[in-house]
Image (cartoon, rainbow, N blue to C red; front, side, top):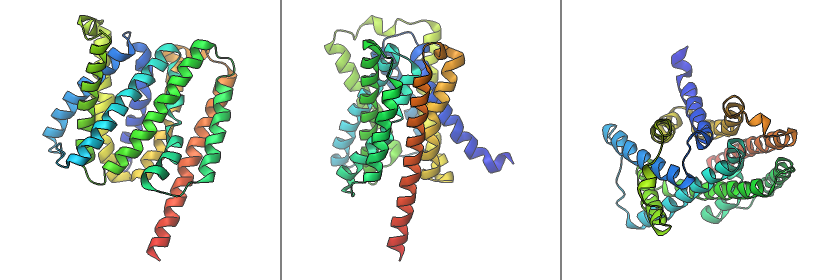
Length: 301
């Protein structure tokens, strides 16, 4: 019985960990930029060790592809900075909810990158998400609106790097892409901190609990989750995984209630808007799956 469903259980463990990354944004009491710097550093080192031990590809020989990875690595770093800043300014629930809209950004980014036909159905889904965001933000103050804007920018960055990585994966192993993106993100963020005069001893000032959570974030929620996702996708297929990932905001919101007591900070409009956004994102994933099935049938006939 366990053998039959172990990859499904592993998949949901991974999604649970990704959902917990938003909670960690509140549990780790250091600046968002410092948090991201440590996450990338720990993820890069642990990925390097993990990929070496598992003998997974780590090198990129194509110079043109390397330039693309360089740009994508910067986008990944910007995604995490805006994501955690949004959470620091507001709530974990808001940050992860904004992030769930990334799949809808993909609907207009994909036609540009892959030269696919624009879908009006997916445009409709995007419009419904805007209504959901209206409900979510109906009682926000100025600070929360700024957090919402940062969260949506984070989702936009996630949409871009998701599409770019899918394109890059056609010519470079995904393990090598991720490793190099972590390294590039670390260099970019170090330069950013240096420019802002923040690359100093304050970077390493943290409590023991902050350090422990950072290790968990970098090793378990990033490196382990990435390597495990590759294995799960091989066993269950990309669609099953991508559809299940839409449960991430659900896990985060449910975790945020007992751990962070965010139910005391958020009202009914927030949860109504959240439900609308999550349902639209899932409906969009199902619709895209049906369209891919039709395309495959056409090519096979």
